[in-house]
Image (cartoon, rainbow, N blue to C red; front, side, top):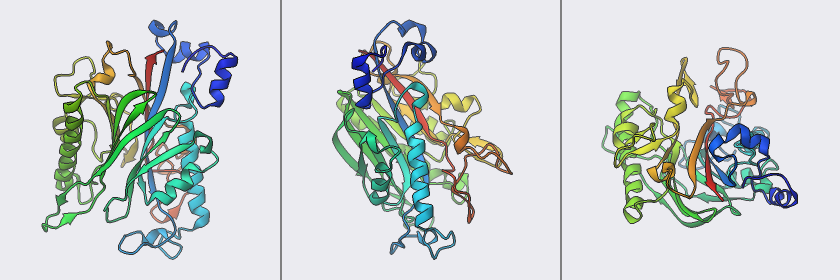
Length: 359
């Protein structure tokens, strides 16, 4: 919630709601809405890059992330990783005056136990994040999840939807499920679909069909929600392992960046905006990719809607999470490069969007 700082607003700040002083409002919010009372929320996504515990799990390829493995993964490194991830989450939306996102989708964590350790870290413990998580059948044992501040978002339903795809040999490829979470975002119905589409392992072209299959499934999940409520507010988020301009996103998910020219059936891809400006969330051989995306149904960019609306999109690139020296200068500051421990954060930058509505 926005407004001038007063006794009431200070109390609300202690309760972890957003209060903007007028100076911040002048900077971040357009002139048309400065004089209005506004409420706001942050929705984010972050690839945690191999947040594994230190235990070797049977039938899962996590052996390198153990004390005996090639990365010499141990408790000291694990807890440093937890602290680093929690610190980044606490900062998402801070430039806009928030104390961490109200809702955040995550990927590349091993299990619910590491998420429990994450939300109990001192950087974000006061946000009282609740966890939505299901075990995926991924052969590396990594999952997707959603965290939410329970004083702002109330969950009404959740489900995990498997992606059924086959390899060249005809056998099933075990990958991450799609996570669908519905609830009340500050009292307003909203739906979140958290994704981690199949990787480009084996080459982009060879693996392209797997991501097209994932895009088809994501689109079907959106359509099933919209079929029940044509004005449903749905946010698709995730590491898609494709850019906004790849056919999986443009042709099959039907996502575009110009919110004022959306055709019937198209979605608004907020993260294509910074991508077209040369920004990205990860880099490979000198090229930036925007694999981590935020895609919205048109109801979230409808100026006639009095509820929450998309205001802005951001790639979080604080210098602390950026590699400052060496061959990878300017890239995300990673936990490992190969088997060399760097003590960093993730090979992906997080993304977030700001939603606003009139009080």
